[in-house]
Image (cartoon, rainbow, N blue to C red; front, side):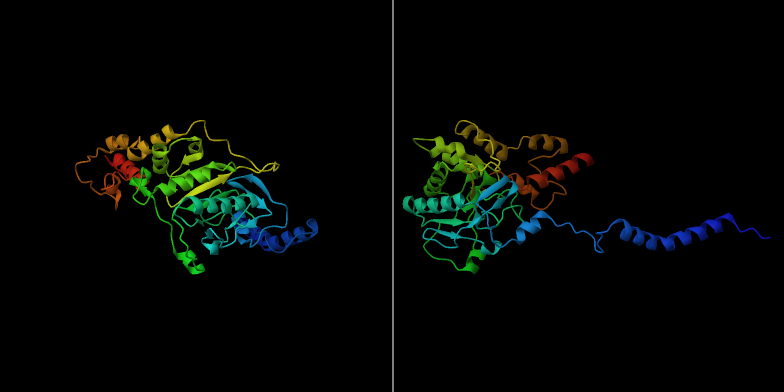
Amino acid sequence: MRVEPIAFRYLFALTLFASALPFALQAQTQSDRPQARSDRAVTVAAKTLFGAAEIGSKHAAESFGGYAKGCLAGGAALPETGPTWQAMRLSRNRNWGQPITIDYLQDLSSKVSQNTSWSGLYIGDISQPRGGPMLSGHASHQIGLDADIWLRPKTDRILTRPEREEISSISMRRASGAYTNDRWTKDHETVLKLAASDPRVARIFIFPGAKVAMCKSARGDRSWLRKIRPWYGHHYHFHVRLRCPEGQENCIAQAPPPLGDGCKEAVGLVNRILTPPHRTRMLSRANLSRRSPWPNCPNNAARFYQTSEGPLYGNHLQYILWARIRARQN
């Protein structure tokens, strides 16, 4: 009697088991899981769901969660065009917010038209119809209480829908946000003062150089400056954030700004733009000289140091990464 090799026996048994496994699993699924589905569960990102909503929900207006993690019930739409405002980037469908936000924007645009040479305001993103995370762009703007207002002065001309997609706002910064440029006017400060003086406002974000400029020129009552918070990147628009409406317990408020006008802190941010605290350290580690060309320098990174407008900060991260690599090589 011939004895089969042990390896062959194991291989034969494994083949039988593998061929029977799909039928066994199918039987187990059908018998043990009476509501089993043939298709797999699909996970959909929250931003996809919220981004697909075309209209607000049919509920009483209420914000749920925080500015950067929440949603909006009963959202109201800012009309695309009003006597003193025009909503921009209409294809995004982000001109929705709490009714209090829509009222605020309409009130502010009217005050701006009465107190400046502007005919009103261009309104950027507010929120999606039901708030929540967006497919692109903002981390906040999720509960209908944030709004971007363009720093481009509004004219009397009513823009077409295509024009509202193509026209851009105008940057007001110089030296990567350390200073305002020559497009900044007294009207811009007036607009910010009007915006911040409204008791519905919690804070306003704008680039550090603008905050410092207003700190230097503001006269009389300076209490409104407390709400102006210097924040990088906000040089084409300023970002208004309203307080949680009274009685909406599910709305998570942000801590109020520190006491005082915040001007000293803004100056500190400007100084850090002009002379980043780790710039000197990184230069020392990489053994670089400001007076000599940089070998193997990435495109445009040298512009980080000096231009006709002063030191640049825009390529800061690129420069730091490059300097770290150079430091390891040296």
